[in-house]
Image (cartoon, rainbow, N blue to C red; front, side, top):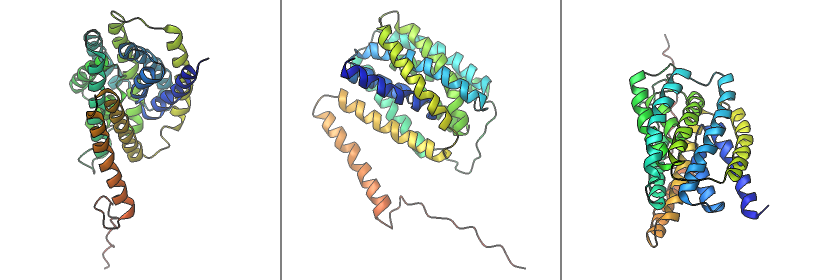
Length: 294
């Protein structure tokens, strides 16, 4: 077994852990791993990631469903609409330059990460864990599905925000429901790509098996971590991976400028948050008003 293959399989466990714990992020890891570690062509990596993420999501969704963290009507309708969009995106993606696809992939990651870190604007609104309106689910499913098939993403980094931010589902429920959606859309997108791309199914099968092992552990951890921490941690993770892909794909000196532009504000924010008492990034602790005495 080569060093590259060993590294690919070990990192594949992290793919599954991300899917089981966060309901997304699998494709964000899979595409770069298969491209930069396993050495696949970007289009082959995108197509392979759709199978790996789809199969792993299906297995992980079963465990979430047993714990009541799946809204089946929302998931199946979103998934069905997403399948139509994903198949079309897969057909289109097979005729677009791999570099352009990777840059589009990274830009979507950055935009989504910002939405996740900021969260819902109405902070006082309670999470809504009921089934979402059918028309809204269909429209969101078509849009997210098109993006899924086009750039090879399972869609968790788009589905989870759509369910949590737009639909108002609590993060654990959004995570579980997103896995159903991801499985459906990933296989539809794969169907579109297989019309123009062939895969090494031995490698794909090995990566999938390793990812499934990681997803079992991840699904057991989900629900034990505070919702705000999950959402923001997920957002920071997606942002970091998006910047990494852009640095890899953009030509010099653009990639160097981007890296400095991305890292400098992050370091400044961390220093301000943890080292400067008067930093505006620190949240003031609001103490409840004392009860009025009679």
